[in-house]
Image 1 (cartoon, helix red, strand yellow):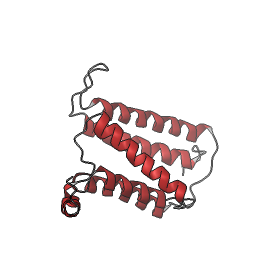
Image 2 (cartoon, one colour):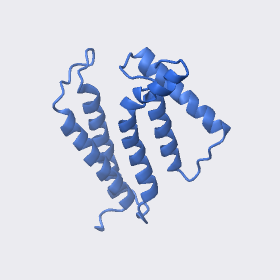
Image 3 (cartoon, helix red, strand yellow):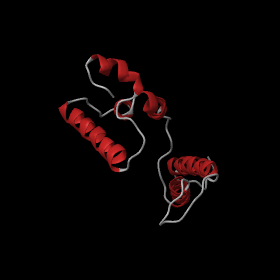
Image 4 (cartoon, one colour):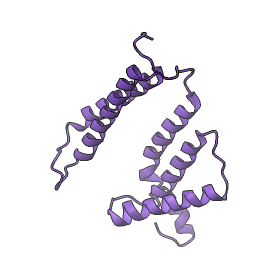
Length: 163
């Protein structure tokens, strides 16, 4: 690590933010931006990508100005669990539905933390979060997502509940 970098952790964090933000911006450039009053499909991804790049630049500047800790090791387990949770959500959302996809996302993401304990508070929080997401995204915003997907149609049909 060069001597002019006084905080390697901030340096690598900033670099990751810039790479992810740059990749997202590059992918979103094909979508129409629109205006603040009439947002196009590329508005949110492009604004979010620019925000990630700005946060990365701030972190890079911090890495030169403020002394910080070195990076001791890469936490592979949390990285794999969080990445796996996002991929699992993407795979499950259409077939299993929003409820199952969110449950898997939350459980896998929580498993990445050493402090997570699956107790009554965690269960209540998870149920509230999934319910709120269903209300906001499916009912409130009208996104074309099924709460329970077609993979569970035979099971629900056996109990007289059609999805």
